[in-house]
Image 1 (tube, rainbow, N blue to C red):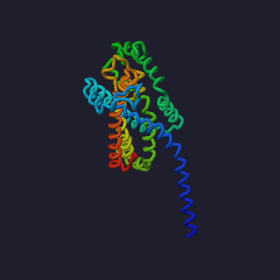
Image 2: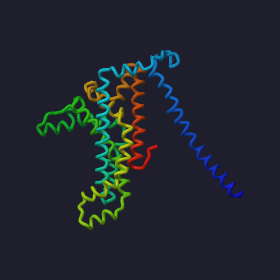
Image 3: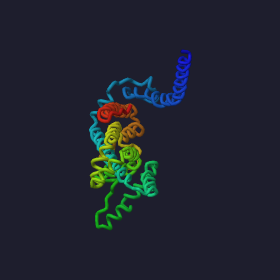
Image 4: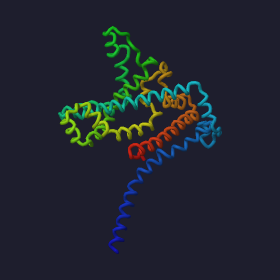
Amino acid sequence: MSQGKSRSIDGMGTQAMFHLMMLPGMAFVAVFCFVPMVGIIMAFQDYVPAKGIAGSKFVGLEHFQYMLELPDIGQIFTNTLVIAVGKILLGTLMAIVFAILLNEIRVKFLKKTIQTIVYLPHFLSWVVLAAVVVNMVNLDGPVNQLLAALGLEKINFLGSNTWFRPMIIATDVWKEFGYNSIVYLAAITAIDPGLHEAAAIDGAPWWKRVWHITLPGMLPIILLMAAMSLTSILSAGFDQIYNLYSPMVYKTGDVLDTYVYRMGLISRQYSFSTAVGLLRSVVGLILMVTANELSKRFTDRKIF
C-alpha cells in the first residue's frame, strides 16, 4: 500500500515538473499574444493617441458600418480570397506532385541535392526574393527579353492588373511548394511498399499505381492539410504583396493586410484599421473551428 502511495506521489511530482516547464512558454504567450488583445477596444472607439484607450470616445459599431459601406471593400475582399485560394490550391497540387516525383528518385545524392535546391527559397525573406522577382520580370529582365526574342510583346507583370495576381500566386508557390512537400513525402513513406510491388507484378503501370495506391494512401494527410489551410484563407501574404505591389495594381493587388497597413499606419485611422483587422480575425477563428470539425469528420484527426 505504501509503495503504491509513493509511486502516486512520484507521478504527481513528475507531472508538476512538466507543468512548471510549461510556465515560461505560457508567460510568453500571455504577454505577447493575450495582453495586446486589449487593443481590440480601439475598434469600438474614436481612438485618439493623445487621449489613449481610456480617454477615447466609445462609438460602438460605427467603424464596422463604415467599412461595409466603402465602395472598394468588396474588391479588397475579392482580391484577398482570389489570391489566398489560388495559393492554397496551386501550392497544394504542386507539393503533392513534387513529393510523388521526388519519391521515385532512387539515387540518394541526386534526391538530396534536388531537395536542398527546392527547399532553399522557403528560408529566404520576401525582402530578398522580391528583388530577385522584380529583376527577373521587369521590362528589361530576362523573362521579357525571352518574350521579345520569340517575337512577343513585352509584359509589365508587376504593373498590370491582369498579370499581378497570377504573378503573386506563382511566385508564392515557387517559394513554398518544396518545403510544403515534406508532409506529403512523410505520408508516402508510410504506405506499404508491398502494395506497389504486388501491383507491379500484376502489370500495373506507374501512373495507375500512383492513382490507386499512392494518392489514396496520402488522402487523410491531404484532407488534413486542406482543412488546416482554411484558417489562412483571408491571409494573402502581407510581406510578399507589400514588397511587390504599387499604386498601379491596387485594383487587383490590394488585400486586407495591406489595406489595414495603409489605413492604420499611413493614414493613421487606427480605430478603422483595428475594426478591419478584428473582422478578419473573427472570420479566421470561425474558419479554424470549421476546419477542426472537418478534419475530425473526414480524417479522424483534430487540429486542436
